[in-house]
Length: 146
Image (cartoon, rainbow, N blue to C red; front, side, top):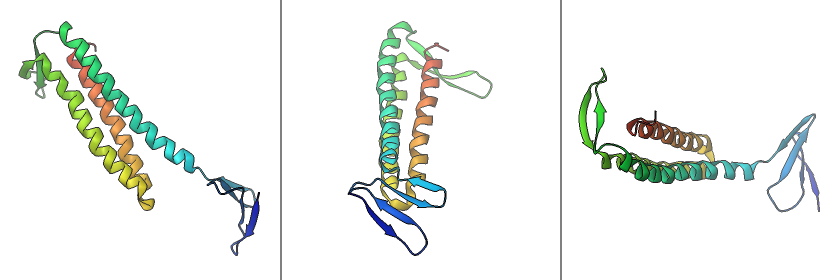
């Protein structure tokens, strides 16, 4: 059942049901409420980054038998190796990714749940995906895949 309300500012608001879908019309302007999309995007970003971390753990576990027992871990500005460590040290990258995922997820979801800080929360979750990309590049370089 649809109800129509006319406001003082000229907006005609029609509610189709008790759900959150509604539209506002003034002239040629039609704006749909995208609350379901606003929930799907942060959750998909979180799940994609978590899946990336899990795949990175599996990738590192499969790559360790195929690489030398000692690998270069740190380089200086000129590309000279500063530190050499065991190949098991590659597990630090997905562990760092897991810690950053946990911290950024808590912070990003907190900011999104605050009504005034949704954009900042989305920036935090986007940064989380960028961190995962950087970790993947480093993992692939250390395992000599690129």
